[in-house]
Image (cartoon, rainbow over all chains, first blue to last red; front, side, top):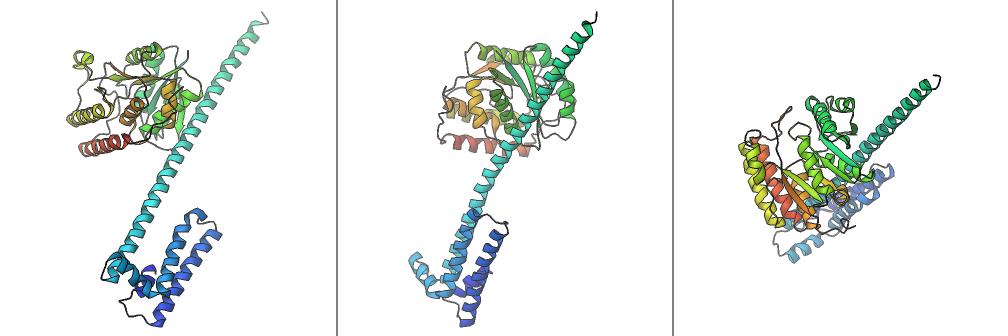
Length: 147
Length: 242
């Protein structure tokens, strides 16, 4: 879907008004999907920003095909398709890295959570042992008293 | 003075009870905690039957996380000293007692039991025979760790250690879950703690099997070198003070 929108945005591809409308429509649909995911609590706001930026990029490409040619010129790339794919590739690479960072953070949090839980259980066991010991002391004293 | 001896164990039901009994006998004053790293066998049951406290991680988190659990428990429960040894029976508790004596005498903050240290050589030849891949790994780690810390270490992956509260404080906050042994040494030296090696005698495994196959060893070594390299550029913490 994203590729379609971006391909339509390419200056070298002959763009009919229909393809541009389709691309813009898909980009808007994509952003609506993000909003819907947030609304249903399937996606947290803090992870949605980057997807909105991607959606806006798609929309901009559809609305102003000249934009991509401008970017390609700035990059010194003659073929706009190459520029387009480099940008998309870098964007995806950045996203994947972003996810790895988030994943590592969460792995560390999960580890700490597991450790805290393990410690709590050991503490409970220690307390129980202590109570038992005291309990048996009391029992022994109780037995001694009648004599 | 309270001492905690903790034993990280992952599926060591066959040997853990004997190790606990041995520790109880050799170090009667110390509390024993088994950190059960998500074992799927009866490790946890055997450990509590043998009279140890058990901290069970709900799923396998790796040796680093298990050791950190032990340090965290020792810190939170206010122990003055702690030591850890492997659950497979390779580490005689009598040697652990010698490591503890070093930290108790305040000659070091962290003491490592080394099976390769000069003094240990004659004693271990009959008892402990390392495999080839382990020998290669050992020399690589030894070289890089010595380079990184400018202190001579012979047994970088030793799982027999004793520590005081400064080390507990440092390790309960900063301990690599992936690469526990080596990075922790580098970290301790970088934070200005006194790290000392003591020659110890180690035995062949009593139960279970080593997780190191040749391919895994190669990956292990590669990961270790990367970890050490990155560790050199980590920011220092102030947490180790006090």
